[in-house]
Length: 301
Image 1 (cartoon, one colour):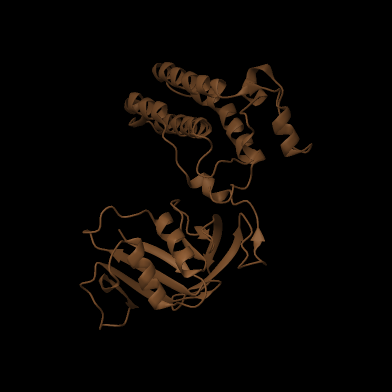
Image 2: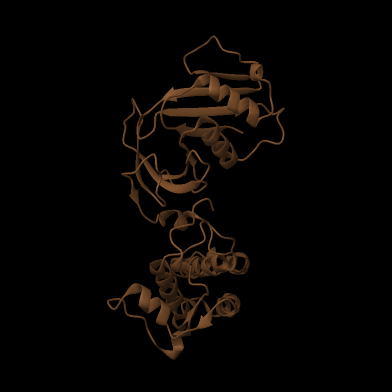
């Protein structure tokens, strides 16, 4: 695999070589660090690290390629922590979410935090600006500290109930009648989102162990739609949809407790109305501990 990292401050190449040699358990002669336009390099080394300058809050980009002979190869998070500690500087690496601004930032002591980083440069250069971090970083005392919920939306959860339903409803989703195929698509898409939230709850609210109250409310509003969407399906498709929805609802009930919507209303504030109707019972339930009480994610998690 190839590791893509960025670092803050001056680049000490000898220290980088030593750190990579230690990380991959190699003699320093088997690590090559050089610029992209430098042809006189040790291309037979087991670890090739190409460096390039960037500007903004960060100063160097590292592209680290260990050969396939090195097994096992550590995850990017481990490489970033080791280099941050060995080099005594901040190291950042991309998050797993398909979001260009999603990064992890590792402090010199090895503690990491989510960071929102944008490239303000153009085609000719990269200017990386750190917009916010979830926890303070001593190297950047003036950075905004804020929760970064956007990565939550990009984190997909398995939805086996919805996947099974899609297979069962395929004859209707392939219908030549647009109203039928669209009704199936809407019902399965909304059910998948509802199941995804319940799966996230069961897994401890990945990726960072918390969930905004505003997102929780959106999911409950999504559940409001599902009854109507089921009725819009062709008659033979309604039964499997009702069974699938019932399964997900049962999982939701098993992982929540009745509170008459008090916790959500208290978090959202008086301007946000929380329905209190018996036919919308999901609004009266909440998971414990409350997912929005521990935000942002704990440092080093």
